[in-house]
Image 1 (cartoon, rainbow, N blue to C red):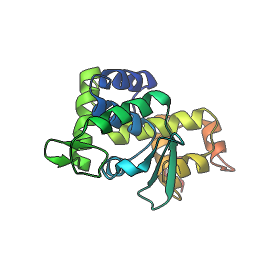
Image 2 (cartoon, helix red, strand yellow):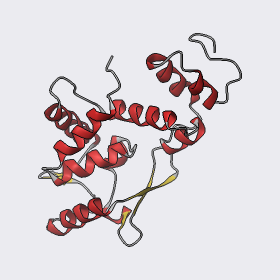
Image 3 (spheres, one colour):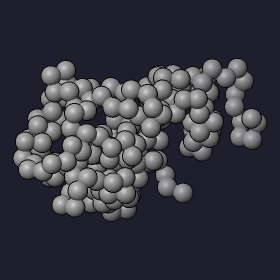
Image 4 (cartoon, rainbow, N blue to C red):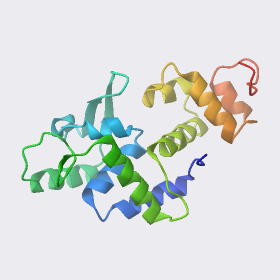
Length: 185
């Protein structure tokens, strides 16, 4: 089983990806909690530069909005204006639109380049994002909503118990009256 990456690992991955605009944008989106399938299905029209936001339909068929920092907007605008293709898709390679498998390979390769001893997946990164949000005081229901997990409390409890089984404050953030113990559901 892969371990959840440390926050510093994710920062190194983003820094490594800066040498390639597509890789940088994909890593940024993964760090916002998007799934690889959501990234590969993005269209240029999903990026609203005037309002500085990405608007897309998540895998759970709900509309999501991700704020876009100025540096990401500039990178996106440069990337889109440099393309001379007919595809509406946001991200392409020489053969056409990127598939979820292409996006996964990019994430693995960039993370390996950043740190050869830790090859990350989008799932590892989403788990780290969930843990960071919980540790920063965001409620489980908000984390589940942000990551499109609703109503899958079991996934988050299982993941957290695997990595921090004795954290009572986490269990309280879930609204559990008694501490959750493995095998007690």
